[in-house]
Length: 447
Picture 1 (cartoon, rainbow, N blue to C red):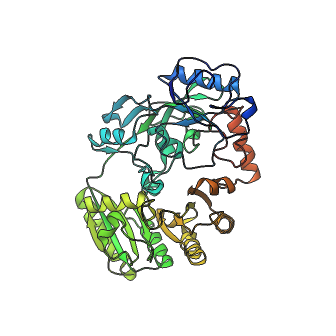
Picture 2 (cartoon, helix red, strand yellow):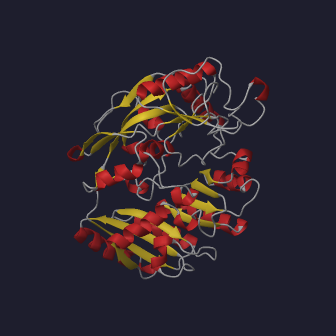
Picture 3 (tube, helix red, strand yellow):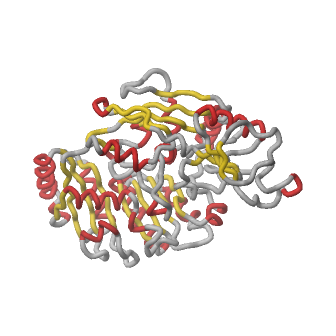
């Protein structure tokens, strides 16, 4: 920006009417920007002014908290960052009401520590992407909601949007608005805040959110079945989830010659042996009883081992964070896809992908979520993978890949014409000039 040294600037006012990319001039607009200007806002009024100035200057903004997920999505054509990390306060926490209100830039780890001190949790188990992406563990509450990546308990507790009660945000018009409320039963009008979950910062700049928290279970047990192939594991998980035993996690880690050092999963034994995992939570007596009963019901799939409490929790953290495909591991240079499909189709789809590409897969949500690490290629095998995912009635997102790959493929699954038209209308109603995270969701939209 003219008159400013590229770097981090606390925002005090509007930009000049005509703004060029940092380090450039009108004659240099075809050259790559030399630096990025980061506008670190102090409050909601600053956010409004930044967005209005960006709108007037036709300068798209990249929205960041601490930037832990910047490598997810299409590369964006902007050199201006709106930094929300200073909006980091816990506005209100009422443990007895199971509600917390927190600013969007608050570090997720700090908020989790706070609610953990009251023996509470975010029941949807938000994924920690730092291990998979190879980034510092510095995610924020806003990033958690914007990404909407739920963990293994998604099958029982729902996703991030199901726990988002309300939000304060600034639209692409530069106007603040409030959606939802601070009560669990909130059905007045359209539940607008749900649109923000999983929007990756493209609809509005969240400044504060109200979330539902839930008590932690007193105890947990995980059944471990060994040596099942993908299809048998799919059947076992389906049977367990259809049982009356209230299963809160169902995952399968296939046999693989690629993996070494899977974190807590190593404690289960040889990394060369497939494991099928089924979690039960509740009071100690109930969890223990249900584990024994479920083991008996699944006897045809083999003898189940039972692991408890801290060991069980560490195993599910590894599943949640896709530890076998960690950036620092054997497959760290491979692109990783996140595939959501009907659970009954998961085993067949995942097995075929691994066989035909030489890649590797992990199953969660009873087969409804597949993590696929595929050998490196110019397009991350996007054409073949999406063809098969479409045939299975699912969708796929390229979570980890080098920037040149992400420029050449659709990171997020292309939508059908009708749904794409509806999505565009929704986006334009929030951000008509496409100022916020321009081009992150759709290839070619960054120009």
